[in-house]
Length: 247
Image 1 (tube, rainbow, N blue to C red):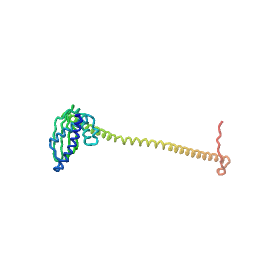
Image 2 (spheres, helix red, strand yellow):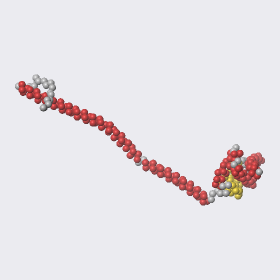
Image 3 (cartoon, one colour):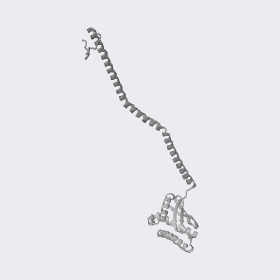
Image 4 (cartoon, helix red, strand yellow):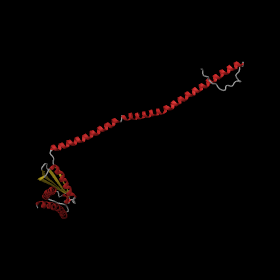
């Protein structure tokens, strides 16, 4: 019964804050709230959030974006804070911009501070749960963040240096591809050059054979003319020359 009364108290608290803001604004033209009212409202709100999250009844307030965000912040902080124990203190700051209430909460593992913010019309603006860390834990987190940042920078620099050093191999690779292309062209041209050489040799041999036949014809014609007692070979015509085999 007490749990449900606490939940009802939270709803009444939130609605009461809004109603108080509208009433104060209508009466004096500005939103006003005393420090005592702000502290009481902050304590009730934190206890109600802790109770609703413990019972897993957040879905009932899904229509309210601010309350839903408050539940999410509390549940996220509870992973490091541990289970809720009690409220250990609170402070309130009130000015023309609105109201800020900080509620100190003790957890089973770590302590936390719940920040409740109301706007100038005293409407609930945000509820954020911030886990408190020791100085050693803060320094450890800072060191890890520094190492992570510096490590990332060094890794990127190493990759860039590898890329830059790889540029020196590009001309060699290009030259290798060009050399392969030249070898292929030489292999293609080589048969053509061989064919031309063979043709020239055959042509020379044919010319040599023809010149040899002419000389042989002249000798035979001169021999026949001498046997006939003539000095000129104009009347002789050699039709063919055949070689006889020696037995």
